[in-house]
Each structure stands twice: as structure tokens, then as C-alpha cells.
Length: 53
Image 1 (cartoon, rainbow, N blue to C red):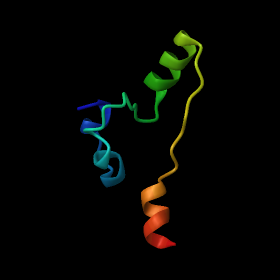
Image 2 (tube, rainbow, N blue to C red; image 1 turned 30 degrees about the vertical axis):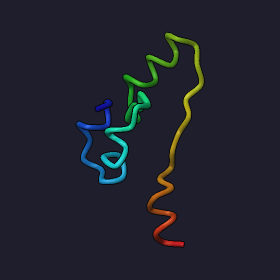
Image 3 (cartoon, one colour; image 1 turned 120 degrees about the horizontal axis):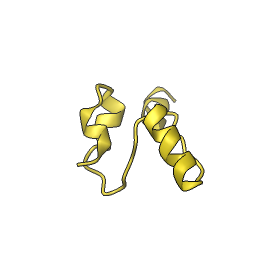
């Protein structure tokens, strides 16, 4: 499990068992990106767009 396992969003929970170290959006993610000097890759919810399209 990754950090998304503690989220409420059904979309985020779909990815809770991915081997990727996903982070939910928030201050902790921002601080870690700054500390490591890395960009943030943001998902805007492909799953919900896919269902609606």
C-alpha cells in the first residue's frame, strides 16, 4: 500500500495498491518536493473524465 490508502476519494483509493509511491495533494507533498528539489506530477482524475466522456 502507498499513502493513498488513507484517502477518502474513490479515485485515489483505486491507486492505493500501486507500486508507485503516490502522495495525496497537500502541504506534506509540497514540502517533500521542495526538500528533494523535484517537480510535482499532478493527476486531475483521468478515471472520472474517462467515465464522463
